[in-house]
Amino acid sequence: MDSWAHYLDQVLFAVLPYVAVFTLILVTIQRYRAQRFSYSSLSSQFLENRQHFWGLVPFHYGILTIIAGHVVAFLIPREILAWNSHPLRLYILELSALVFALMTLIGLLAGMVRRWTNPKIRIVTSASDWIIYLLLFVQIVSGIYVAVFYPWGSSWFSTSAAPYLWSLVKLNPDVSFVASMPHMVKLHIINAFLLIGFFPFTRLVHILVIPNPYLWRKPQVVRWYGKPKETAGGGA
Amino acid sequence: MTVEVTRKVSFGGRLLVRLAGFACLTLDSMPLQAQETAEYFKRNCANCHTIGGGRLVGPDLKNVGQRKDKEWLTRFLLNPKAVMDSGDAYAGRLFQDSRGVLMPTAPDISAERADNLLVLIEAESKLERSQFAGALTAIPDRPFTEQEMEHGRLLFVGLKPLANGGAACLSCHSVQGASILGGGQLGPDLTAVWNKLQGRKGLAAWLSSPPTPTMQPVYKNHPLDSQEILELVAYLESAKDERETSSVARFNFFLLGLAGTAGGFVLFDFVWRRRFRAVRRDLVHAGEESEDT
Image 1 (tube, helix red, strand yellow):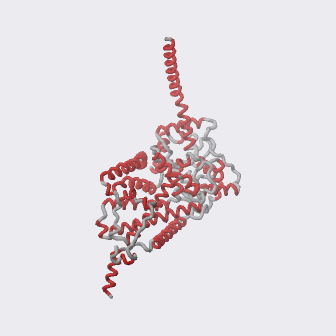
Image 2 (spheres, rainbow over the protein chains, first blue to last red):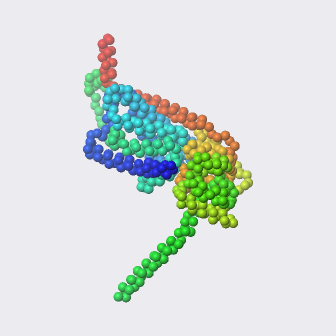
Image 3 (tube, rainbow over the protein chains, first blue to last red):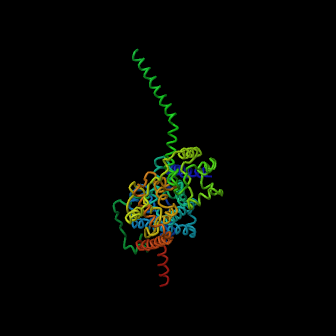
């Protein structure tokens, strides 16, 4: 029984990560070569834009902050521990992370409800969209569960998850850091690798083609013919 | 020609040296293995057991081979929980004597390693004084000072950093009254750990090399020093009669999170108050109005 669990841990935490990352790299390149114009999130804002706002905005602000937090804790774990050495600072960090995570969850749920209930949107929703919704849902719910029931994750991520992830980077996986973690933590890690592996098959590829140069390009002058109010009546 | 011979001799010499070295290695492998097993015992077993030094968290292992047979001991070493779950009466008694602390499965344990450990324990039991007769960290019997307890609390919450760079206990553990929103909950609440590990000696031995599978990899390279162990034991002893922390802190944390999220939504609505809502809806609306007039 125990050797079976040991074997499973090896497969899930030492093999799956590499399978996921290789799938990500190879399929991303292959898809870009074969179907370049499929690199899009296929926006449905044109079909419905009121509910869309309440899904899109909180989800993206939430998930970008949360992912950035994970990356920072991976890159500078010791500095995170130093920050957390004052309980008040630890609470501020944990609470901010929880707020952004809840925003992400509510945003995702708003998006799912919109896709299910609006007939126009439902037609343009593919099976891969539903799979990605499901994976993201599992990821966010397990993350929030871990944050609430196994605090303080920002500290123990630095001592346990970061060394595990670095051991993967160094091609010498050390699963001892995660093998004895609670099931929800394990689910969060495994599901993250599934998301990475599934990434290139889905609309998530839009992450790779965000028009980032918009952030630093020179300002463009937009001239309106007449006052903006009048354009709605038939100007543009 | 002379050069040729010298070369040949030196080649033969080197070969001989290598062979001799190999032989030495083979002969030396027994003590090496015993040394490795002793090192393993020190790292993974001595935090709860002595050999002839009395009980810590777990029983004194002197002459353990006379109390149970080798087959049982090996089975228990390989998976204490499985033997316990099988309803074994002796394992049940051990569990009771340890006040509900179940022996964790030792890391990288194998039948061969278990065998080596039993050989080591038997050999050490025969000595007048085993190298494992004393606890790893000596803790005085005198009452702890206020300062030691306070330093222990600071170490626990992280305000005083651990010398070897280990993470503060609060990351994963809670103690009643340690901090406002409570401590971590990845590991157990430590309010009553002093009682559970049967006092100073047991707790200090545990801290000198934490044996649980979650803590071991984390503190393997960042061990606590003896002064830190003393101060932490002092702090945990001062907290031993408090009630364990409740889940109110966790609930408050979640409520604060929800409140923050609601605030975020209000902010989004405000920042994008002039967002583009739709051309067509406005057109239809305008058309309806013009029809009315």
